[in-house]
Amino acid sequence: MDTLLLTRLFVGLAALFCLAGLAWRLQAFLALPYKPEQAPPKGRVIPGLLYAFTMAMAPWSKESTRRHLLAYVRGILFHIGIFTSLALLPLSLFPGQLGNFRLLLAVPIGLGALGGWAGFGQRLVGERERALSTPDDFAAVALVSLFMTVAFATLLNDAWLAAFYTVSALMLIYLPFSKMRHFLYFFFSRFFFGIRYSRRGAIGWSSTHLEG
Image 1 (tube, rainbow, N blue to C red):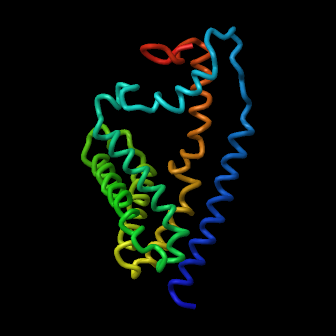
Image 2 (cartoon, rainbow, N blue to C red):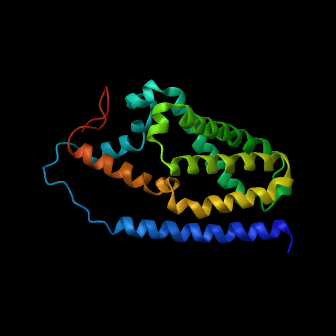
């Protein structure tokens, strides 16, 4: 069995393991008791949900992102690079068909990798960031940044395919046990944020901001 076929098998098994791990995490989360608000609602839920999934994520909506716009942009590029690299996984099974799409994929992946390593460096150099970071923070950011780096190299040269599959497999195996699984809870957090604060009349659409 050649190396490329072996690494493809490895990443396939890792993907199944990852899905099983995420399903286990999701099942445990859904089993948690839900405690609805007891106070009478002061605002409308639908506008609040619209806000939670749109303008609430704009950089000017939070002081932290308004004051650190560069970090916000870096995070956006980082996540776009991750999703593009994940899309490359099934596409890489047909490298001869990528053609001009290689450059289209390489740009966001390359920028995402740069954003990832910049964030990793910030955690190492910044005193506050280093104090707040856990070993998993360093491991997860480094592994995902390496994943995008190898994905970028693969788009430049197919000789990196085996390395791309190997790093992808390691990332998928680690994913259910690391902070990388936070994407699983993203929609839940936005949903409950929208419901809770719209019922309290704190958010919704108005001329200046979203309110109930």
